[in-house]
Length: 484
Image (cartoon, rainbow, N blue to C red; front, side, top):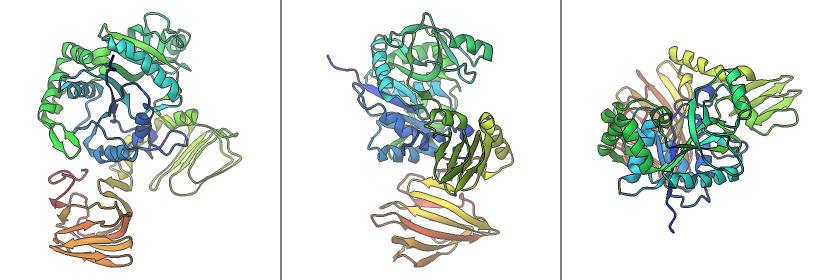
C-alpha cells in the first residue's frame, strides 16, 4: 500500500515585534537563529525537524514578497528545494494561506496530506513531535481535520485553548473530537483549564487531506476560496516564486483558519502534543525555554556576567557586560539596545508602535538590509552624504541601474569587482576605487568564488533607496518597489 505524500506547508508571515530590536518587519524572528545554541534559523529548524516522516515531500512555503529571497536562501542553505514559494502581496491571515496551499497542491488532481506549520515555533523534543504527527496521519487519512493541542504547563492567558469532548491521553495518542475553541482566557479560567485534561493550548498546527480542508473552506468560507483561486489563476512566475495577483488577493477576507473553519466544522480532531513547544512570543519566553547556566542566565554572543542572576543577555555586535543585575532582558543590535525587566519584556510591542508613529527607522528595519545578491549595511550618514558597506555573493550581480540624484564612489576592500559604467567594463581589485557619476548607467558584479566587499560613499541631493532606475535585472525586480 502506497503512502500518501505529506507536504509541509510552512507559513512564514508575521513580524514578531515582541522580539524587537532583533526581530523587525524587514527581517522577522522566523529568519533568526533563536532556538538554543543552534545556528539554524527558526524557519530552517521547522523544515529540518520533519526528517524521517513517512511520505515526506518537498515543502510549500508562503511568505510576504519582501522576504522571498531570504526564504529561498535559507532553504538553499539546508539543501531543500521547495515545491513552490507563494508570495503574498499583503498579509491576509492564516485562512487564505491554507486555502492557497490546498488549491496549489491539488491543481494536478492529486490529494496529498498537508502539514501546516508556523515558521517561528520552537520544539525541543523533535522525536516526540514526529511521533505525534505520525499518529495524526491515521485520522487525517479518514478525512478528519487534525490539530495538535499543546499540553499546558501553566495557566497561560496569552494563548487560545482547545477543549476536547473527552480527556486526552498522551501515551495512546488517540485523536479526540473538538468540542470548542476558547479565546485567551482570564487567569481563573486558565487555572481551571490546567487541571482539566480535556484542555490544551491552541498551537496553530494542522494535518489534513487537501480535499477535506478545501471542501470545508468552500462550504464555510467561500469568499476566501474564490479570492485565492483568482489570485492563483492570475499569478506570475518570478524566478523560483509564484507571485499572487494583488488585486484579486486584496479582496480576500482577513481571517484566521480557526475562525473560518475549525470553530465551525464537525471534522475537527485534536491530538495532545508535549514536546517542549514555544511560539517564541517574547524575550521572557526565550529565557524560559533556553538552557540556563548555574545562575539562571541565558547568554548569547559577546557577553560577560558577574554576580548576575536569571537574565537573558544577547549581543549581536558589541560587548555586553551584566554586573550585579537580576531578572533583566538585555538585547544589543547595531542600532538599538533593549533593557527591560523580564516581566515587562512582552510589552516591547508598544515601543515598536511608538517608533513607527515617530517615523523612526529602527522600528521597521535594521542597518543591515538583505538583497538577492547579498546585503548592504548603513555605516554613517550626514547632510547630503552617506557611507555603506556592500557585500556581494560569489557570481552575483546587482541590476543594471542609474540614479537621478546621487553619485557614488566605490572602494573594494575584499575580493574583485567587475564594474560596468555606460557600457564599459573594468576589474577593480582590493584597495582600488572607481567613481559612478550621477546619471551613469552602471552595474556591479562579483566574478570571483568568494564574497566581495566594498565601501560605497554616496553624495547628492537625495539618497533614498527609491532613486533607482533598473534597466536589466536577473532577479525580476524591474519596475518594483525599493523593498524588492
